[in-house]
Amino acid sequence: MLQLHSVTKRYGSLTALDGISLDVARGEFFGLLGPNGAGKSTLMSLIAGLRAPEAGTLTLDGLPLTSARSTARLALGLVPQHIALYPDLTAVENLRIFGELYGLRGADLHGRIDAALEAVQLADRARDQVKNFSGGMQRRLNLVAALLHRPKLLLCDEPTVGIDPQSRNAIFEYLERLNREGLTIIYSTHYMEEATRLCSRIGVIDHGKLLALGTLDELLTRLPFDEEILFPATPATTPLAAQLQPHGDLATSGGIVRFRPRPGYKLSAFYALTEAQALPPHLFTQQRPTLEAVFLHLTGRSLRDA
Image (tube, rainbow, N blue to C red; front, side, top):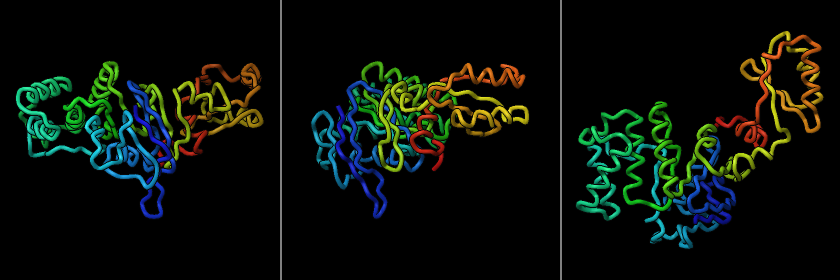
C-alpha cells in the first residue's frame, strides 16, 4: 500500500532521515518506534506531504506522495503530535471545519460529526469550547478530526503524549477497532508498551536510520539471548553477580541486576550457583526479553533518551 524507497531528509548539516526504505501493507498496524529526535515526526511529515525529501520516493497505491498536487494525499489522515484544534471553537465547530476542508457538506457531514463524537465519548460536550476540555479530551477530538473523510491510511504521530491512562486506553481501543475494520495505521511512539500492545509489525528507528523491522517475535530473534533473569542488587547477591560475569551481560539499574546469559549457558548452572550461596528462589525473576532489550542491543542506549 505505502512504499518508501531510499528516502533522505536533511536540515542543513543534520541528516534527519538517512535512506529509509519501507513497505506498509494494507490493513497493517505498523509501529515506528524510537526516542525523541530519532526521525519519527520527520518521516510522518514526509508521508503526509508537509515536507519534501532531498532524495527517494514515496508512493501510496502507486501514486506519488511527493507531488504538491498528488491526489494520493486525500487518502491520508494525520493525527499530529501537537494538538491541531481551534481552542475558542466548540467540538462541533472544529469538526465542521476539518470536514469541509475535505469537501464534506450537509447531512453527510453532520452525520459523520455525530458518529465521531459518539465514538470517542464526547457527544455530551459537542457544544463546549475546546479550551475547556482536558488534555485527554482534546487528544480524542484531534483523532476523530483526522478520520472524518474516512482515509485509507491513518498517521498517528505520538497521539497519547501527556494524557491520563483512561483517555490513553480509550484511544487504544478505538484505534484497535478501526484497524480490525480494515484501516491501515502507522503509529509513531517512544513508548515500548504502546508498540507492544498495538502494532502487528514494528520498525525501530534512531538517528534517521531504520535499524530493524519485523514482528515482535522477529525482533526478539536479533538478541543473543532467549531469557533474562532479574534479581535485587544487595550485598547478599554481589558474590553471585561476580561469578556470573564470564557467562553473560549484567546491567544494574534502580537496584535491580539484569543478567542476560550468553548462548550455551545453561540456566540450571545459574540456579546451582544460587543454591550454593543459599539465596532463596523468590529473589529471582526469569522472563522473556522485551522490546526495550532489542532497542538497547541495537543502539546501546535507553529508549527514552533524547
